[in-house]
Length: 184
Image (cartoon, rainbow, N blue to C red; front, side, top):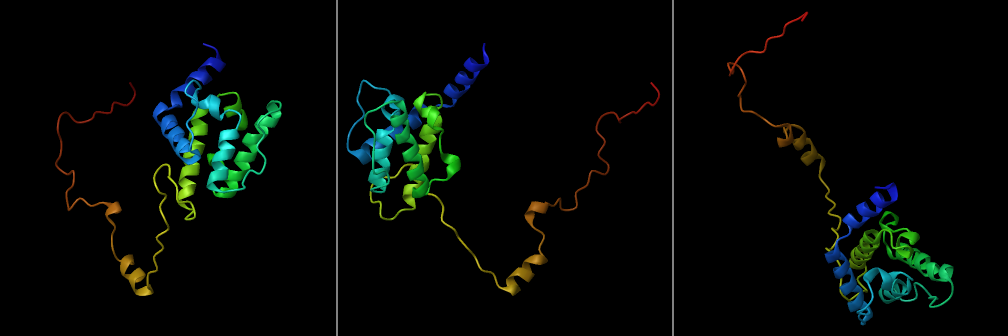
C-alpha cells in the first residue's frame, strides 16, 4: 500500500459520520435551510459559502463579501475569510482546519472538529440565543484562600501520597526465591 493511500485510510478512519450529521443538523438549524439531499456533507461545505453564512448568523457582518462564483481561488478565499472570522469570534487557532483539507476533501473530520469548536465558542456569546453545539465549556472557578487556610494545608499528607497503614512485605515469600548465578 502506498504512503498516500495509508494516509487517506488513516484520515478516513478518524471520520465519525454521527458527528458529521450532528454538525450538519446544527448548521441547518441556524441557517434555516436543509442541505441538498443529493449532495454529500463535504461537497456542500467545500466552497465555503455555507460556512461564511454560518458565521454571519452567529456574528453578523463577520464576512462582508461571500464569493458565490469565480475560480477556485475566489471560492477558497471564502474558507480563508471564514477562518479569520471564527478566530475573531473566539475559536482557538489550534482548532482550525487547513483550507486545502476542505477544498480537496482530505480531512473532513478536521472540518467537523472546527464546527464543534464554533459551537463551543457560541456558548461564550450571551447575545446568541440560538441552538448550541456540543457541551458548554467550563467557567473559571477562582478561589481565594486566607493565609491561615494555606498554612493548615501544609501539615496534611494528601491522599495522592498514598498510605499502606503499616503493611509491609516482610515475611512474604511465595514460591522459590530468586537465584542470581554470576559467571554463567
